Length: 296
Image (tube, rainbow, N blue to C red; front, side, top):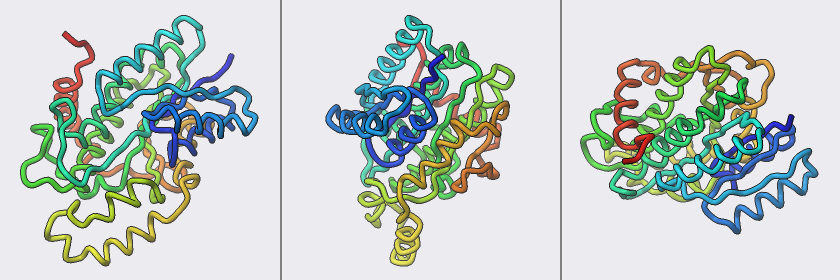
């Protein structure tokens, strides 16, 4: 039977390279993104490799939870109708914002980096479970190390600094990923986090060069930090995609779950705060509150 995969934010960068890798591994890949023109070019590039199954594009703005719900509904309905399994979901979407902004009344970084992939995953769980053995891959970031670890509210106390708030949202998603793995243990659905390490992307070439995204105390060290960062993010997206591809396809991971696949495409120790059950409980409470699975 045909194996299928969905990759979000896959019209360029790490997401597109992940989609190319899954297509090369024999999956029929659905590329998800906002821009139909970029989506068409991504699909054209994938299909130019003469894959076993052609790729396709679905348009969705993953910064809108309503569009996330619509996307999940369409994918679930298609698989129910066709009888084809959904074998892999890769939540690659991510964004960093230099200035604070809200999306639908929710702080944008938390919404895009956590609530959006959380909601898509939860809504597709019945479809993924029906296809077991299947895999969920959530892309994480080393930025979790600079995150505030307080999850009483969507927004942490204090001033807005984009890099730290991005790291906090990624920490929330990593805690959710590990918690979800434990919740689904025994169902045949494996859950992994993939850390791409560094790569040159639109985000690293733009937002990350703005010193105001870090707290004032760190700005004094910005020239040094920036040089180090530029060295670590100078690699190609094709290399940064390897952890996601491995998490989705590596046969040695069959039957395993709750692992972080590091930049070497092998399991690494998770960031300790993400394994704290108190963090997981607080993140789940916020997630259920701000991205309810059932709308009234």
